Amino acid sequence: MGWEYLRIPELEQSMTMVYLEPVGTGESGRLADARGYNLSTYTHFLHAVIEHLALPKVILLGHSHGGFVAQRYALDHPDRVGSLILYDTSPVTGDDFWQTAVANLEQFARHHVSEHPEVADYVAGLTSRPDRFDDEGATAVLRTIAPAYFHDYWGREDDFAPGRQALRMYAAPSWGEGPAFDVREELSAITAPTLVLVGDDDFICGPHWARMIHKAVSGSQLTVLDRTGHLGHIESPGEFTTAVVEFLSSVSEGTA
Image 1 (cartoon, rainbow, N blue to C red):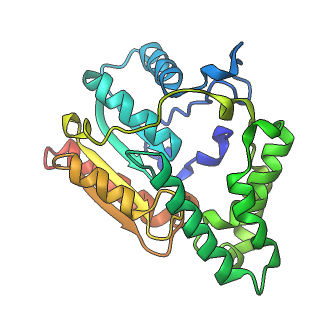
Image 2: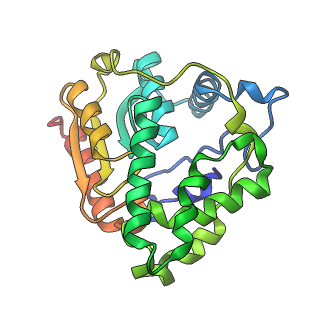
């Protein structure tokens, strides 16, 4: 996805925020071989950016797939991570992960289909083969199923619709090849103070996966945002910002 959806103005008021535009998206470069879009590649470029910033340590926030990258980076470069925020993510993908996501989306469709018949096609959109789309096609699918990423999209459609229409998806990064993501057996090695942040109604990276991370990372803090989907910084910005600021304050005070 394009990085813009993750813009967090509330945190920008008190922090220097550096947003990464992933390779293969936006104005970033493209790989010659699309099979190279994998976790190793994203972690490599993240490290290059952190090296370029020339800071001894950074606060690293990873959302969703970015959370996979953040976990891998914190394990591979523990000396560069001052604190870690794992936001709506999971320590593992694979069959169980995707089966759970599909089941949750099917439940979402059943709940909303009488008022919004178009949700009957959401599961097909989520499970469609990415190699069948170009950027425009991938973007259309993302925008179509976007309401599922919120707890109450239609109740606040005036607030969320502009952001939905601004979403941008890039097809080639979905063609990457690499092993399934699974760091469950490694997470106990993370030493950075860690906040695990999740929406209680996130259909794809929900509390089940967040608690798995929280249990594995010693001393981590778990915050579950009520009545919130996969995009808490948009749907519950006040609660999201409070959770992040209070966590970082406790870290700076040496109490986390």
